Image (cartoon, rainbow, N blue to C red; front, side, top):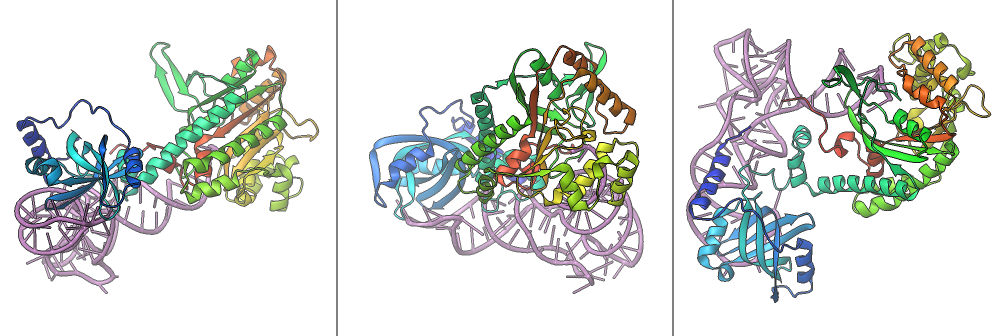
Length: 491
RNA sequence: GGGCCCGUAGCUCAGCCCGGUAGAGCAGGCGGCUCUUAACCGCAAGAUCAGGGGUUCGAAUCCCCUCGGGCCCGCCA
């Protein structure tokens, strides 16, 4: 991968010349560095044109722009804390050295600078430079200094260029990491234990999705990448770990679009001796916590302002069946047969296979009639039993399960149940799924049923699409905006 | 899987409708300039117009195919 254009040849030539002159274009370290923010702070109290020559600072970062005015020059140096103007003057650094520095450097180079805090005559906080050291010569030119990298494909494929040319992009990804950190902090404080369970499994279960399939040489057998974290975590509740969570990548062998990625970050939390009402309260507290923090992470973001507002409780609640009947005008929808539901789903354009379980058709109808209206954070509760084989039947609504899904901007963010813990019923539900044989069937995990036979305490659990949650909180329109390296075709 | 749109210099864009030798800005080169901050001024250079095929005297421009990407629909969460 060597793009050797004339621009690169020019810069490679500089590297050679620097070496010939006895300087190192890629030195090993730069000691005693402070942030650009520290220098700015020291400079802002000065009068325009003044300099605080009592203290010397060393800063390092990437050169953005260089403005040469004969025997004075300005350069913008950017580090993680922000940007700082370097003020170079022939009188300060010496005529010979001044010319060498300007000859060596190009925008995009990583440099260290030493000097004193100062303000330019126009008032810009600056570092009056004694000397500049090249720390890493950039032989490939950076993106355009004003417009940055606009090409969407390039921004995704070469995220490092997007990040180095866009402070907004850096801030967004930093915010994502901090939000994830806050999720961990919240759950840790609520007494949950973070665990790590296998990604490679004999059969991927806990959801209905196409797995990625690979091969274990050791086992001489096919293994699958997990599509959810549900079943191993519930086994841990059987084992007596009463509050557990895992925050990690799951894989589904499906399309990449604005709300789906073949690999995405899922949070699943399981809680013994609690039910889905408890989980809802915990979820609301989590959302409130994240809404409190997101504006600290993205103070200038319109999207984050809206996220902080929208994720603040209380939230709307709708009953799955009541709302579906209300929006569709179809009565008695939960008691219809698979054939009747299939016909209804076909009438609204669904093309899922004929042999899909009844629950799949109900979900298609819900997607068509109800989801477009779920703009605000909304808890959809008490789904028909046919929609999931892993939730416990509702204690008072016949034919329903104790389940809630959370929607925001018409996209599902999370899914929670009072967990089914009756091993006999669990086995029956898995068998029903197999009998339906549709692509949506949940895999029958025999060992999971065996675990339930040893007694799963009454429990609740939840799964979140963390990427979607981050999208909602930050106002991102596409999952690709908050994935550092979304999957792309080889080029 | 279906539909629509996009791909021109390292980067940001014009040119495409209506075919006639490919244009600018940034970055880079050379020269000038001691307070600019998208610095400025002058000169020179930089392009298999995504790739392939076709129509035509002549194709960046019209047509077909391929590749890559975006958006919408379908499917999957």
